Length: 291
Image (cartoon, rainbow, N blue to C red; front, side, top):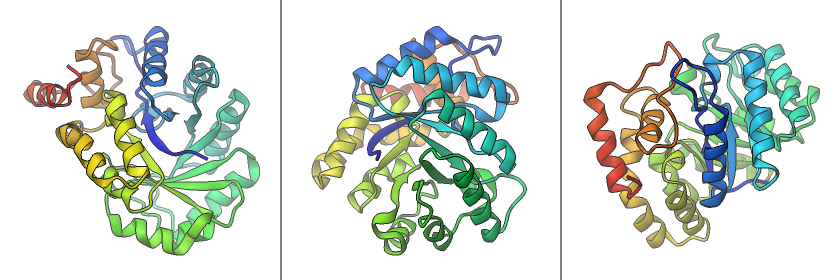
């Protein structure tokens, strides 16, 4: 259903932490005009962990309205409570989102059986298409390929965002799931090779600041043009690395502010990018040709 360069969109905020609707419109238009294939609203990069449920739903709803069906909107609705994830997923469906992205429950470390039950119950409760999201570096919970294969049998679970950066995971998931499950990269540094080896796209932090280049790279990779894809990706490699010098989305929000796209707003416990990292991120933006 979805492929190519999908942006894990930041949630722009004023310096007092309030959501900045005008800048959200600017970002949505920026991505539509520069070839981004889909917008992921309220994922990790969107600071889902620092917005309350009411705010979370409001940002999804506003994003859907601003996009106005020009490209798909995928709503981040994962939670470490199954009931909360159901509530958020229901809200996303009622808001008009095209699909939901559900991160594995964080902190409480469910078993693989618990992950299967968690996602089955959500899928049974809300009919919207759903994408699994495995990012053990942040959640302390690793969804195994065999678990993904079990969940591929659920009709409205359509894909998985695999963010380990381990390309052998991709081959194992494809082997087990075949055509039942689309697989997306959640790791910009390996996203090009991920698609060249059978992935359908990348849900990307880098796309926030370099949407046109990421769209072109993904298009080349999805057609199997490895030489062109790597050529486009080369100037982006510093961004793939330096946008993670501090916890995401700290560097990418600073970068967008540096580009004049948003204010320097971010919510505690996240803080503005440390001064020592500002020049390295600026250099990465310059190398990518976006500053």
